[in-house]
Image (cartoon, rainbow, N blue to C red; front, side, top):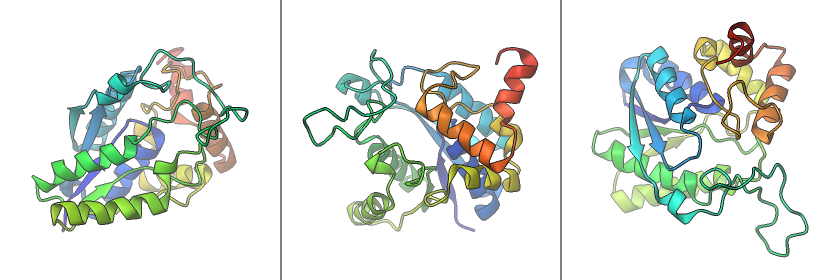
Length: 232
């Protein structure tokens, strides 16, 4: 069976995708890659490493600090989290919240493809979803289709990008995670933009996550763990 590399952020979606890949390709054929891109909250990396350990797959942390050098967004610079875009901004980028890191998924997948090329891995798996609407253009299906073609041409390598959550609602993603047996690992995931545990439950990422679990009528294992231990 062919091998797969999962871009693992340590969040809800990438964790679901890790278990999806294990189910599709077999645990022995799956590995994961986490990016240390200068994000303000290193807890993401700790979560990814914990999730990979629980899933019994290898995890490599790749340092790329260019995003923090570029700045201009709330995930890599000391800027307050903006929960919604500024509709009064007089430019075409005004619909994007300041949690958008320009080019992040494009860069992640390009580095992941180069990493995969060296290891004869032909499948990349990423947990983006155009239905999980934060307005991020690099989460759209047409973006990934275009990038896949570019990577194939640029490396002369038959790489395939899988985005199993692309057209799923957050509730459906929760239901898929339950089906795949990912819920134990889900208790150690991190989604909150504020980087806090317990999560802040106020940022857009927390709101979307809570909405998905509520609509699926499933208790969030992270919230349950934090409640039981009084902290995480």
